[in-house]
Image 1 (tube, rainbow, N blue to C red):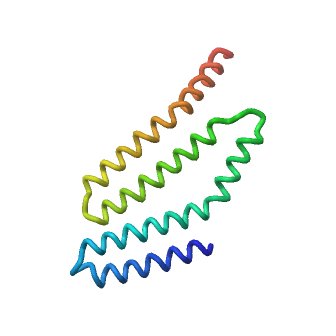
Image 2: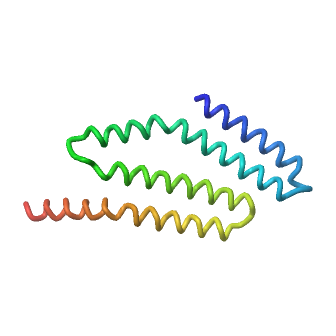
Image 3: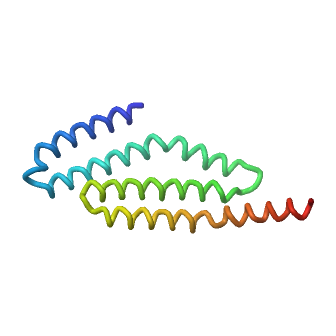
Length: 131
């Protein structure tokens, strides 16, 4: 909860500073926004560290090594990085970079999730063979 308040303070200060200097110095305003986004991303990673640790413990203590937890964590990381980068690009006025980043993120998530799809198809095939 503390990270949320810190992030809210960072956003409010960044918006005020960007509005004050944005008209004269657009470059400095963009750098300020990117820096604030990086700071908020660090705060988000700190707040998610307990969740990530729990998922890794769950994967380690399961009956067999579950590779799917690692895939899910990687996929979530790609989604967060893609969204943050696309939002920064959109804020900077580069909508083509935003769309390109979203496309890259989507294709990366699809390639990471191929083992999940293969496993799902194997399970469906086993069910169909039983029936």
